[in-house]
Image (spheres, rainbow, N blue to C red):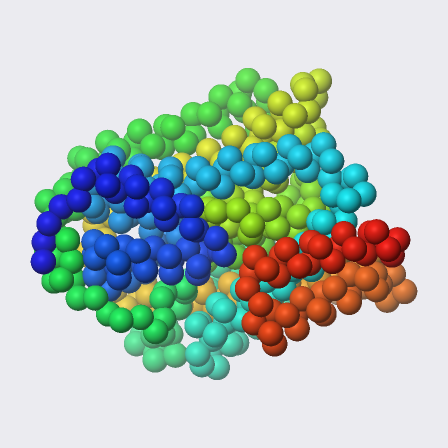
Length: 454
């Protein structure tokens, strides 16, 4: 079956997908699969998974890039731009509003109590479940488990930079794939499971390749040049006007670098941002990163939209004579721009050539190795968050090349520990959904505050 769908109808579909895109990349990809493949039958199972595999080879949020790819496949450049912008827009508006409220009232008793409760839920729902979800899909043999363990030790005890870990894993996987080693020839990621397969021939796109989707070097270079300018010109303008030590320049440079090096999906991005924004730039305190994740988890859009909150708070606290709220809003806008503009660049540059990746065994092996390493990185993130949520004091102990973060047991926050344990039971034993768990933990935090326990 072949046919067309109008750009106006596509707008309604992408707006619906954007409004339903809760729960991180796995949930967002499942929503797109349900609506675009099973319900609308715009494209088939094999084409959807092929696009997803390509997006997972790229740095940045794979769910938004998948939306751009399918939007471009259906309606050329306009479709890709529309799908990508709509996917981010609801979350951008919501996070901006929540960031302003947090900056103004985050330290007020009841508001702080709500976020106190949300920390436990986010630790369990976002971080711990991410380890389990991604691990279940990627750690399919001893080699992949060893890669994950090595990545964890490297980042937790040796403090090896995250990009270096991902690069090393990719190289190992690529070499293993080229050598035909079976241990590396496994899948990974967040693809849909347990679905009824829709054949490409039974969809609007059919089995063929649309004319605009065929390789066109001139179009790819022209479009990419425009996007590269839109991405980097604001960064250069900020640095040359305000100086490279200015907070806005640092935000622009850091998140531009993040857009290039954060392979492995949204969960890997969170680990990298947390490490840099909290420990290096000190834009946020450890607990505040969890507050930002709570915002991102309870609003539609990609989970990586939490970077907007990071940029907002970094600029808000370093306003340098500017109105803090205005500085925060500008910081959030700059962050969002340099985080998501590169996603359009990667898709528009590479999508016309994506057919060449079909059956590229070495590249798929590199992806599998990167995904395995990301499990170790996320485990480090879970441990780091858990220590700072449950304990008031964490000490860094140096022993030769090892540098370990260890909790001061006497500083345990009993209320936070109990709430985290309850959240674990609710999520894993009682199978409570994400939104009810977040609401319940927020209410529990407020109750703890009213009782005077925190």
